[in-house]
Length: 248
Ligand code: NAP
Image (cartoon, rainbow, N blue to C red; front, side):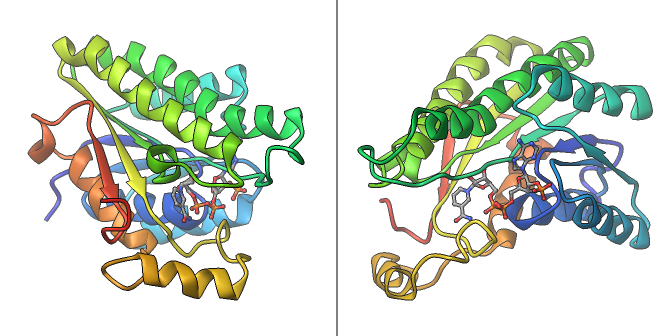
């Protein structure tokens, strides 16, 4: 089944964790994938080789997507190499958790830059190309922390809530060109980002999840691939929460 055949996708932060699973799933469904990373070239190359090994097409591209020039270059590499961009997944993200009294302003700026400004910059560059083709899918990976808040994450939650506002506003702006913009809000997913949480907190969290387990990167990848497909053509401006029922 290759419902994304001939689609060109850019996945920011596609080298590890959730972004890696999304890149692999989009490729499995036939899309050509630009795998963006910030520092981990080996991990991004592993994703590319895996896609190519399964008969797909991909390239790795280093860019700090919080930087305007680098974000613009990322979208340009897709359009220069493959002629277009159909799917943009704004997944790159980071945390610098602390209570507000201990959090430095630079921890706020850095997280908002990586999680929110990056999505705005990449979307701005991609929309230009999508408008011309009158087709596009933008999927922003937000978080339940942006929906219900999370103590110790005023910076992260603000960035993720901002991403939801961005999703809804942009969805209204570009709908007339058949471009959809949606957000996926994962709950707790085991990746490098969450690996170091204290064990007592991890088991406490399990009790808060009605489905009784943490999410996997693949759970998020399936949802994202659906929103990237033609089956989701009539869905825009939505936040799909994928959290085992935690935030309902
Ligand atoms: P992760 O395992 O830490 O991976 C982060 C990815 O983002 C890596 O590929 C990293 O690239 C890339 N990245 C970070 N800063 C970047 C920048 N400035 N420019 C380009 N790429 C950058 O994180 P994850 O858990 O998969 O999280 C992915 C997304 O899901 C994030 O937006 C996160 O907020 C969101 N999310 C995660 C969870 C969770 O429980 N894990 C829950 C809700 C939402 P390098 O490999 O080069 O470092």
